[in-house]
Length: 408
Image (cartoon, rainbow, N blue to C red; front, side, top):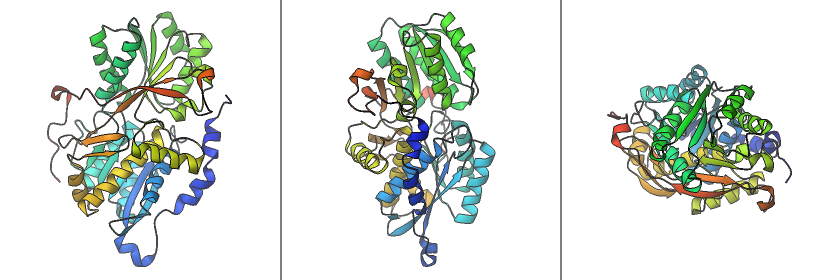
């Protein structure tokens, strides 16, 4: 199978993204009735390659609604988070003040999201985020903030349970962990899930986002003689860690497990040999077999010639739920939309979802996938099979730090 680079993956639809830039009517007569939705995405910085995909997913959902909801035009605007808390919060504040934004979706980094959610709380705008930190629906919870991704507790139990079912003798795990809110949360709950199987975590190396040199980390991991190399990292750190593990000869002999992966966005950068013995936990994969997911994947591939990964699917899924909640509330006022979302049980992407009214955590399936060998692939994007999915177990109350979600 031919290797597809991330540059080619994005370039293939650059023209379509430019054409979509004018989503939402901008006529003066409708100005007072517009519903302004902000996508705060990383167009520069460590996640710059993901920003256009997130933007694309949000636009795709809005276009499905014909750029209108409850009879009012949607004005979609986007701003660059830069993967910096200061830049993101400043731009969210500016969008609220100058554009009248009342709905904010994004960004991508959990660390930046923790700053943005505080702006949403103070300014009383609806906020939806998809990420691995437990704090959005934990000790930073509030009535205007929601998390779309599976809880890290659920996600890491799915990964550990399903991998150990298939590999019961793999007791020695070595971890690479992103040294910020996302990495800390998933590490905490992976180690908790591992207690059931008496996992011996023989080493843990933490790295700042954007680390470029991984040979030292991989050398230490190889010396520990692990049964599993588990990556709890993000962005290009994932790709570089996998490639270095193969260069060193550690993989594919030792399986690599990505605890919280993006799927397609990573797979396009790795050839089939480098994907061998790669297992990935993820919030989204394009072969999810639900009505909304199937229709979305078909439409997305028709438009962009590539399957959607986690990033556009998350932006799409969050935007859909917000638009449906506006319809449910018959109002776009943040407080009304928040009340419409709270406790809602419905079918959407990725299937059955329930929004816990006590925490605003979206309870939904998390997926565990295994990559295929080259001779198993039926087409260029046939990267992996979903081997398990689950929304259980739910986080016990003793781990939930959202003790009082507050008032509107």
